[in-house]
Image (cartoon, rainbow, N blue to C red):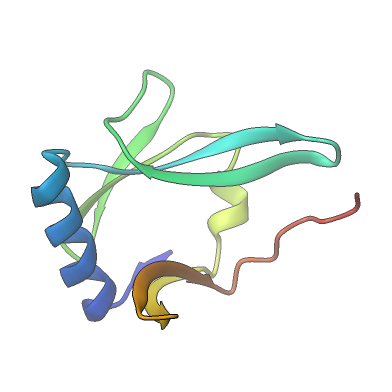
Length: 94
């Protein structure tokens, strides 16, 4: 996984505003298996924690393989900035 410099700035500001120091990726049970969730929240016990482009990232083992080749970036839509996961292939079978 990579984090662009633009995403880094956006995430750091969001972390400062939320008083949270970790970007966390975790699994959400769905009809087709585990889907990817992302939030500003502290790492949980089973998470692996690493620093990517200056951002502390926690990744739950259930979703680690889903993040291979993913680049975290930001994008503006309808005047709002938000995180996008370029290269993420969401499993959608429902």
